Length: 277
Image (cartoon, one colour):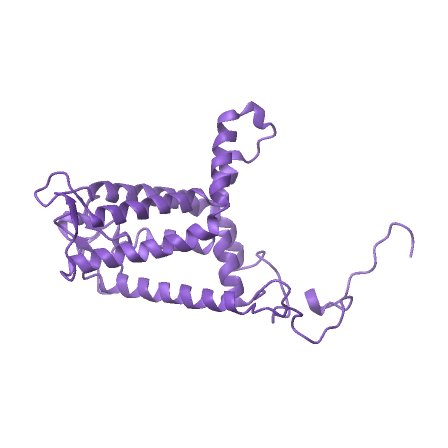
């Protein structure tokens, strides 16, 4: 072989099936319980999706009028099917048929933001698609084209869904502010207020910890010293970004918990614990 030239590329096969790779019959040489992580991901994500589908489909207990607790699964309520007191942004649509989510305007955007999130890609690629199921474990697929073809090429739109997520976080913040509401219409604080506030703070943390946000704040800068403000913002976002995985799971939990609490109070199963009327 001439000096400086590369060996010929294999004519067929990819990854562990390439002719130039060692032929090992075992799927992996790992001896630890590597199946636990993808299995747990399947169980938790499937359970959350099932709960979300049931909650948004029934929509019978989504709003507590006395304290203005509006479930994040139904916000913003912009249909005539919503309680008039929950229509903070007006009624953009007429009555919805059964099973159609009240928050149909924003739910597709939120779902797209989560689905294209860099961490969630890793999670469901490994858990549901097994591409690969774990590090150093061969995937069962014969070919791999990455995110260069339909439909995975749509993953590149994540940065645009980030802007939508910021707007939706603003709406959730507005809902949390309105939750400082007393039974008589004045100022009040209840356990639901605290739950909604914690949820929105964590939602902001997850949204701002996004890789796209980190690129927006500090990307394309050649000299941090010439942009001290952007450098400081980028540093703070980077700290959040290191916890992006934990925030991704935590916010799924707080969303479900907030919705469940509001549903129980709205249905009369629980009474809201009031700290200040």
